[in-house]
Image 1 (cartoon, rainbow, N blue to C red):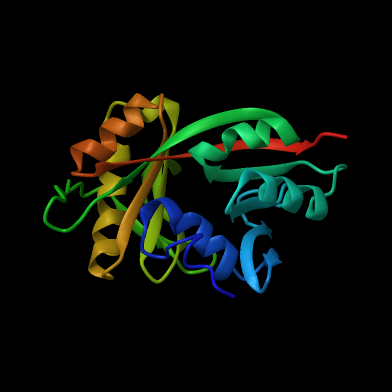
Image 2 (cartoon, rainbow, N blue to C red; image 1 turned 180 degrees about the vertical axis):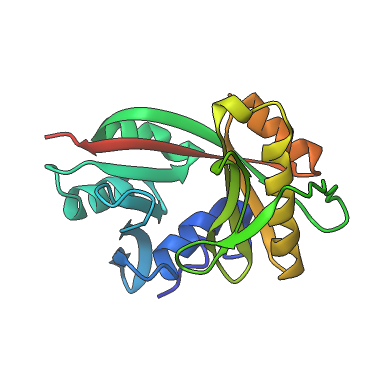
Length: 226
C-alpha cells in the first residue's frame, strides 16, 4: 500500500495516528483504494485508556473518502472516540452525533531546548506494559503522575495528571520533566498533547522548553448519524 501521501511517521501531527493505525497491537485497519492506490484508511483501536470505547484514527485524500470509510466500517449502534486532524472536524460533525469536542495543541521538545526540573520526591515506576512512569506521593496516595502513554519508532507521548489538592506545588512539572528526560535519553521525540484552553498544562510544557508545533488535533466522542 502506498500511504506516504496520507501520513508521515516523522511528522508530529501524524505521530498518534501512525502509531495506532500501524503499530498498536489491537487495531483493525480498513482501507479504501482506487486503481490500486490507497485513497484513505480508518483504524479502530482497542486501548487501555477506555476499554469500552474504541479509538478511531483516519486519513484520506478527501472528505468524501472519509465519509465512505466511516459509513462502511463503523457500527451506528456504538460510540467511538475520534482523534483526527483539526481540518477534519467539519466532516465528523456532518457524519456523527458528537460530544466532548476538544481542540488540542501538539507540543514537542528537543534536547537542546529542554529545561529539566529536579525534585527528589519523584519516584520512578513502570506502567502495566513496561513504559516509563513517574509519580510523587503524599500520605501514601499519588499526588502527581506522568507516564508514556504510547511509543513509536520516533515519538513518545507523555500524559500527566495532578490531584487537585496538590496543584500549585510544581509536582506536575517535576514528573513531566523526569518522564521527558527518559524519552530524550531513548533518542525519541517527546510529544505533549494538551487542550487549547488548559493553560496550567500548557504552562508546564512551555516552562520545560516544549514548543508548540503550530499543529492541532481534534478529538470527540461520537456515533454515526442514522
